[in-house]
Length: 256
Length: 371
Image 1 (cartoon, one colour):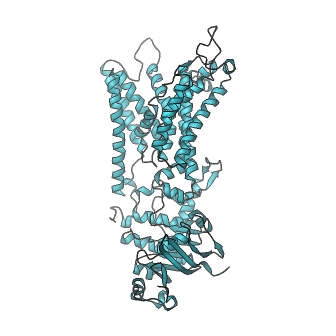
Image 2 (cartoon, rainbow over the protein chains, first blue to last red):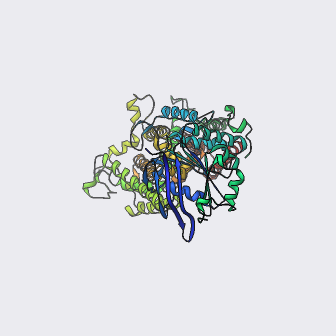
Image 3 (cartoon, chains in turn red, green):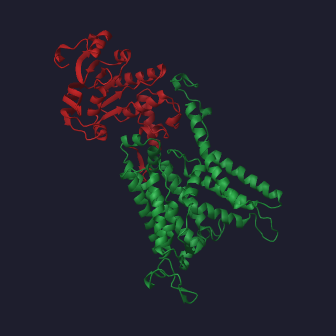
């Protein structure tokens, strides 16, 4: 098995005449945490949408987990092992934590088609294990999501992606709507994922967070990748100049 | 984001601030209403629930209980389906008309050939449809409900028109069917077996006459179905998906739930429950009329809403609806018992429905403010 979990080659997306993403060549190694940064409209989310099958790319190729893939929809991507935490949390407010974690992939005690009886004990136990693995503390699992704070909700959403032994986790601005304490909690989970060796793509505007958490920073500008920086060899100032266009990495010269 | 009052980062949880289930509130309301009507009756020297006549050896006022149970049972069975639809985030306005159409069609397969030595004066079909085994009209009835529910569900799931519009269309069309079926003539004189469906004593025979009495089969069926569907809603993936779709349809879809096919299933079940109500209603009344079930859909929705089922979907339970049905029936019988005009009954009924929704909204806002 190769060392690379995700690779894209010439990934391009046009919305009519708008070139939202142009010729993106990207690589992610197993266990690596990479941040995607860039101004609004730089193509970050577009890039993620092509990988996760939410949209169909105009051209380009994607390899995931050693084979070339072509996801028809987000479900296929998820089945292949790409879990995404969306900006708008995909949680059912009126269900409790285990039900949300296992939404759409419930464990059954007895299979009876649509009336299959749920194995609530097993789901609860698995939930506790998953929360422990991600170091998420939710005091009462049978509480509904509606009654939880934004941070708790985000933690549940993240724990959900981490529960199913996914091969790649993508987080689209996971702390954008959170307070200081809640952000810290989410960042702890990300560190835990790193310790577990699970690869991650983090979209974030928060420079401090990015420098705290990831190994590598990929900068997008106007639909193109303009820099691929090792955290150890760069600085916040540097990244900002790539984001704003003051600088372009030599290997991407001509791209921007 | 505001820091929540209980704990750093909103991560600790204060169990004492957890609100009790809404069903408890509904139950308290039910008890209060019963007590109020009992007191009002006692002031006039009567009783709401208890037997006051010396010459009858019974604890309860059985006549009134019979009427109340029948009211609860027929519309309550519809309400079980409507509750599931509302939890799913939809609405079903067609159930009353489906009862009407199903009643007419079913009854025409349940007729008996000879009435008091003469041919059945209300016969719809020829001899071939007379004195059929009771399973035939039951199957025909359930099939009617299934078709109506299936059409509702398919329209809503695949054309993506709002449930309100789809079921409004079915409401008008099914009523048309019920009038067209026999040109508006009533269909009467069922076989004995069919009449026994509602007028017999199913539970009495099973429990040696201890629990029920003749004529309460609709109530027995209602409670049995209520328990069955409450269990289904809690313990099966069917129920879980109803709540999931009702509280966040996009999340459900992204989680891989086949939302469309689940909707079809739920509306189909609701249609079939309306058919069960129609079968019991015609059996009870020994006749079917084109106007049967008018306004039942609204009564069924009202029972669910009073029972705490949220019209915005995702919240509520069958238990709540059963309690809501009881409140509904206690109010109607209560007003009758204190000899209040039927006009007032309807006015107050409307006010109670609105009040229940206002209360639900208030609870929702309060909870949102707290989270």
